Image (cartoon, rainbow, N blue to C red; front, side, top):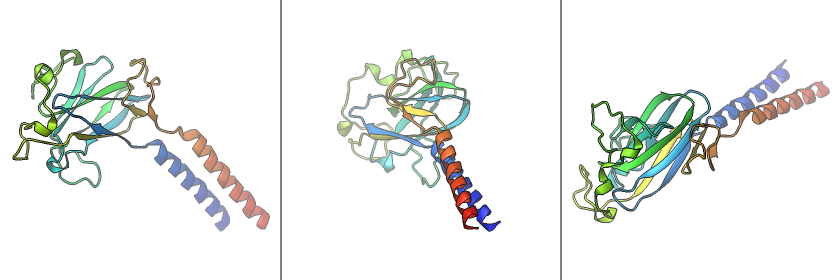
Length: 221
């Protein structure tokens, strides 16, 4: 009975490992050069799920103050966040980073990451904000200013000049990429995605190892 228990425990461990791999966390990162640059990231859901998005690149003012805007497959604004108290586990402070957690239906989504206060055009805090991506952003008509020479509004630094590194984390999604899907209406068709491994082969492998361990224990008995 003790040997059988060890074999079943081995199988359970493999299945739990497979599940943890399947629910992977994605990180997209890079660097912008100008205050009006916009980073476009894409993710998809094959089923409804709770999704978390957050940045951790502000680094107490070393880099620009980021704003996250989430858009659906019709390029309509779903939610915007600037300074958020959302933190991933273990993350301290950094209220100037952005983050959100929300339930989403299956489909393809777009996340734009911009520097404060380059918000979607016509956005108003506390307003209805039934906005389309095609309306553009606040800085679209402004001249480009290199971040090294830019005095970001509401910045915690005393002098112009700020870093351009950005980092976006996503959990609860099936794929995430900086490349747009060829068919935004099809969540199973992201182009060049960073995909989560399928769980079935890993689970089967775990059960196979458990069966081999059980067979070995019986032959010794």
